Length: 408
Length: 102
Ligand SMILES: Cc1cc2nc3c(=O)[nH]c(=O)nc-3n(C[C@H](O)[C@H](O)[C@H](O)COP(=O)(O)OP(=O)(O)OC[C@H]3O[C@@H](n4cnc5c(N)ncnc54)[C@H](O)[C@@H]3O)c2cc1C
Image (cartoon, rainbow over all chains, first blue to last red; front, side, top):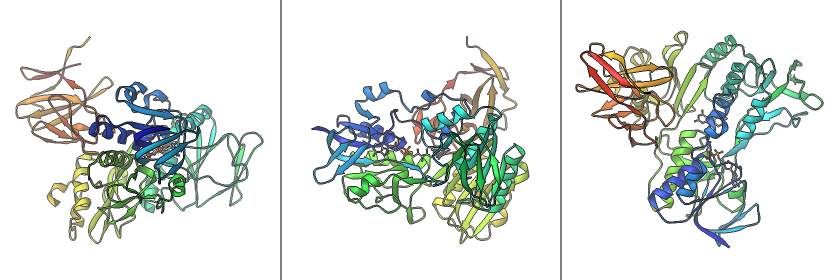
């Protein structure tokens, strides 16, 4: 039977960061990364942005070339899933039938798109977006003049809408909620973006649902709940992801909206760790359990898990953040927007440069910055992390000419 | 072939500690620390943040987006999350002209 000291399950960002930290902290221990996709770990954000717009090639998305893994003596098993974990004798069974013994393992299996059960939902030309192959398939069909229907207006959905529009595709977005970005934006902020994208050529149908995709061997139209039939050449569905927890669950690990880990990212078995989109962790800043599906968190978790697997005792301490690019708007978002009872605007929509501040009981919990001065981000993050009481500071927060440093 | 190109004047930088320069395709950040000038890529190797908008302490700049730190003199990474350094450009001051080799 093969054996390894560290087994990294999943070939994404979190695993690749863990591999680097393991090698940095344990020069000799055998590291093996097993990934279901046939590629070395690569960057997903460009899949809805630069890659989809044709500005970057696939091979530019790899974090490191294959040679790097050879040089660092990190074993790669690609195109093969881990099928089963046996925690009693610490072995993993791979989809190719091989068994591998390990001392410590990281579960960084990420998530997969939620599939909609719709008549016509399995037609070729109906897409989801998670992998390089997914994005490649969309890009291949996204020729000038084609009509695309996008179902779901979250971060990724809106990025795809912008990227396809920039390629000359006529885009219609259908969102079940009354406005886009329902998960994190209020109606005013969402309205600003919707108007902006409308001016750029995107059509929106909100509070609307697709009930059927019609077509013979490809989609030719979608039918909506209100009875509209919208002609189209391709459909992209982006309605969220579910964490890939099946492996952990079957192994008997504690699973609750993700693999449950402690502040060291240890799962319910002390030799098993979890990181990235699949982890349900205790957030020290907001003092609650969260599962975060953002790049910076996966990067950070991968590093932390790698350090701890190699013997460190570091605890999670990150103000989570995410960015997005939509046409020429750059968004930076940090914190936990679900925790707020007050929303303040710093700057004006009309100038296309502003920051929305979310507060709860006068404490900053999140910000959402659009083309805003990034000089303020470190200060805002400090205010979030240290829970500064901002009662009575509302006018200053809303005044873009006021230097936020004064609040530290 | 690389050559020195004038990008700013010392007068312009009198009241400024950093400046963003857009040079055919390349984004460069020019910093002034004490009397010295440093030029480095204005695109953080982590996720592309503008270093010219970052805080400078001594000869260390912190990317405003996600906190990566770089050495202004060498471009080397001094703090996460970035893992690779940024390109530095030689700077020359001739009279009042600040020139960068690109
Ligand atoms: C199109 C797109 C755009 C994005 N844009 C942004 C953005 O702008 N900003 C941002 O902050 N975040 C963005 N994200 C989110 C970010 O990419 C993710 O948070 C990050 O990739 C999570 O990393 P991970 O390592 O946890 O999981 P993943 O990257 O999903 O990697 C997990 C890997 O594990 C593999 N795997 C699963 N099960 C098994 C198994 N049993 N055995 C072996 N391998 C397995 C999967 O095939 C996958 O390759 C985007 C995501 C997508 C899809």
